[in-house]
Length: 450
Picture 1 (cartoon, rainbow, N blue to C red):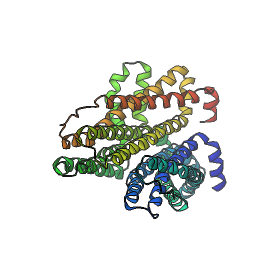
Picture 2 (cartoon, rainbow, N blue to C red):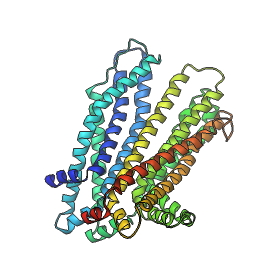
Picture 3 (spheres, rainbow, N blue to C red):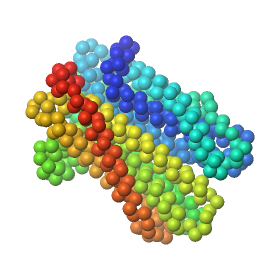
């Protein structure tokens, strides 16, 4: 199985490159903040220690949760794409245990190399972030950067553990049931969503809504103006993560509802709506980061704007808090954008054979590309709508707490701009991925069984 795993890595370079990139950038983001946390434990003034600890622990923990969630989603996509291949291995004699072992070996090799390279980049990223903090006057000039092997080693272990656990869960799902059923479901895209994803979604959404209610009823009346931000700031991310957990279900429902409308665009629109509903488990891997990107960016930036308008006097902690918020939204947005690009590259690569057969049946390359871009448009619109709705869990409670009412007094132009950015990233990712895929001769691709 080790030799087969190595050959599989070589044959599936595109799909594993997407996984590699996700793990690499995830390690960079987590490790950069982990080095700040390690630096905070060195000898320095209490105020400097608190600033670095908040940056490393509070901001870093949210980033870690989002990154690890995204890594699990990406690895799930990578394994789900291979349901048919794994089923074929089982039909020629491989046991489910051997197939799962092959998946774990592949994942371990990719994760080990990506996390090792990412740890090196994280050391540089942490130093750059620390320099920005020190030059901004948030810590004393006498404080030195002390990030090193301890924080980066823990980061690597966390990423490797998450990758292996995700691969194990996905591999167990891929090898459950009869191989002949897996062959049919893998081709049809009819896999059922697990019950635990619904449970996690309910818990995350419920917790986010609860924190929003607490903001309106409790912390809005606190003497500390930042208590309301503390309880409402993460609500949009919590709700977005909950919606991302049930993205396959939401995408299938949305595609069914808009199919009559999209169908008016002709054969391309009809095919796009049909494939979006049929391929919902696969395309949900793209929908999830779109939801998180939209919700986190709108929720955080609107909260920062409300905070700037409603504080009559400059608070000593305002610069630190606003920087934390901006770093959070920048970190999440960048990683979510990378996830969208990687996810679409992996999804389109998996569908090379399907797209090639469409061309052999008479579809032109333009029609094939138009269909995939139309699918991306559906995913983008659904993601923007859900993400905007999730962002209200932060925006509305915080606006009420700062006496602006349900609708904030300013920056109403920001959500549409961020929505356009999210749609543009999704469409561009799809266009580039499908153009590369359809550049090859259809007969060669279909004949190769890709």
